Length: 207
Image (tube, rainbow, N blue to C red; front, side, top):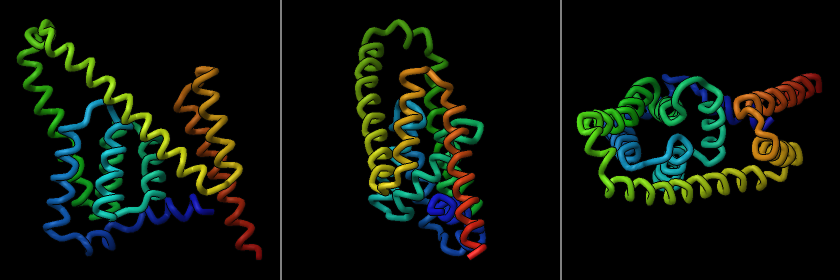
């Protein structure tokens, strides 16, 4: 039931969100996503940690529970996870305009950086200093991903829901021990939660 309510909250009409948006909010969305995207290495899970710190802890525009629901939606949709997440956050905060600005802010930095690197690819590939810098970044990326994993797992366990905790353990075991397909695991967990939410809603109507 809680999961259904959270997803319903995350998908509020654009008109309602847009009424709250002003020039400062839109500029903050674009600037934040641009800076985070330009300074983040390691893919979708890493950028989620940065978005969480900014939009949840600093700006307090969305809640921690909403972040988890938005990430789940972004993971289950086709496309780049960082872009999917930025679209949903932008839409949640400022409607369609916010979604367009967060997408632009997320896509522009890697586009600019990759364009520059592509023109100097041979020099970058053979540069030992660049290779050492990238190795150092790998350690930082691993640390950030561990932080994201612990934070999101802790939020699931805090709810003290037996089913959620069991799905967390089973999903982790399926991926780590049995090399299960990540997409399949996400779909199965989503279907189980969806069926349970539907059953709870049906039982609530019959009361």
